Length: 178
Image (tube, rainbow, N blue to C red; front, side, top):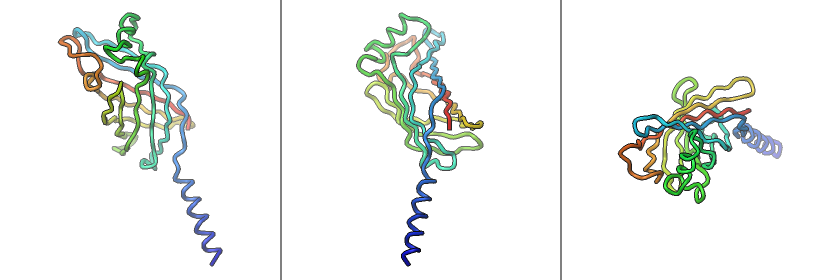
């Protein structure tokens, strides 16, 4: 009887260890954004992406993503505009130096297409968003590509404007080692 109990306990621990989703190390990342201002699309980037990524298509319930990007790395190819965006009128980088995102759920759509539900925090505002993305494994690497749109005024970024769009389009491209 003792052997059966020991066998069951070993089986439970073995199953538990296989159910864990292994962390992936970010090796390359790109965070791009696009917004219209005076009818012209302004493109920008953030660098300084840091992420804790544990994603397994076979175990979506056990998968998670938590990431930040450094607001002070914003680059629109215009130093004066970058400084203005870091000011308290927009991102207030001195008080809120990071933008963060944390997953709450994932679902498989088809093929390598997924959707994630995330809590996105900009400044002191957190909202739930859905990000559709593709996940592609190649050898020992994996790539996540997704895009989504946010309303900048929902997060207190900039005020009301007749010339600047409220819609900001964001593109993410993250490569990890598995």
